[in-house]
Length: 199
Image (cartoon, rainbow, N blue to C red):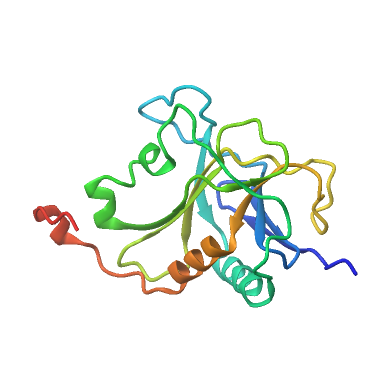
């Protein structure tokens, strides 16, 4: 008996949305849908690098609940053929966004999925997704950067994403990693990093 599809359309403040879907299987499929904020990079990526998008999720609670639902009811055995993405001729997303710099680490917390697993034919650059929070600010805002994600098919119904087209995939392990991040205290600004601490 087919398992019903579970879908979350997560709008972003800058326009567009990220679409997440799972069938209680071993991974969460991810697409972008009409994202409009294209991030200009100071250092132009080489080779097959995909455009970089960024912004802020409008609603964090829905995303947290969606991930928790997947972890509660999803299975551990792979339900679809996944393969790790491969970053070719470009820097990883953390480096492209400068979030690995000392100043950024002082003020932001982040979790990066780089590269993501993929499902179906994949001809583009490796899919990557990064979510971030501002340290010391207790609010529901969650930022994101994304690159290499496929566009959600324009003719597909949002309540039942198609099984055929390519998608990036958040594995169960990375879903757990992301839920831990969303549930953890936001923490303080790390002023000590500016005094030479490298940990």
